[in-house]
Length: 253
Image (tube, rainbow, N blue to C red):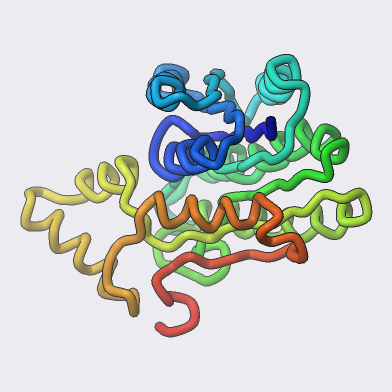
């Protein structure tokens, strides 16, 4: 049975990816810093008849990420794909960011991607597998007020291309999905924190989607479909690609 690791699987895009891969018949290891959330996802999918486990993983900790890969190997004996999805949004322009904020954004989003890749790539080579990163449209264009997050996701974009070049001859394909505004519990909570009341919250949401030619939020399930494409033989002649899933934002704005 093909085995997929999904980091950040406890909610949002990661949860949708785990569910989609399980429906595809893969064994799925749900990795998340919030082990309780990951376990809920694993329990729900297992109850539906899928082969799913959960593990607490801190992607900023080298030993924790190594344990994640070792758990997958002990469980099924193989890793066919890894979806390096876990990340953290840090807001603020460069004058308002503290050094701690900057370091945290790069540690979670960039160093976390690096550590995840380094832990799984030896196993992916054995299966001619795939690695898919979750980047972001803000790693491809400027957006006000997210200096550290944009820089960190830009690093993920560069890392995707570099690893694709390094590992193509060894049979591993490396790509990334770059979502636009996706409505998840995390994104919604961030907007609610900025709003004084429900009317202001709705106005903020409308302001965001007003930038998108397809004038609505994306869904985690829509991102998961593209991740599945990049992770499987559906995209067999693609590597080093950054695929925006963004309602037309980058090309049509």
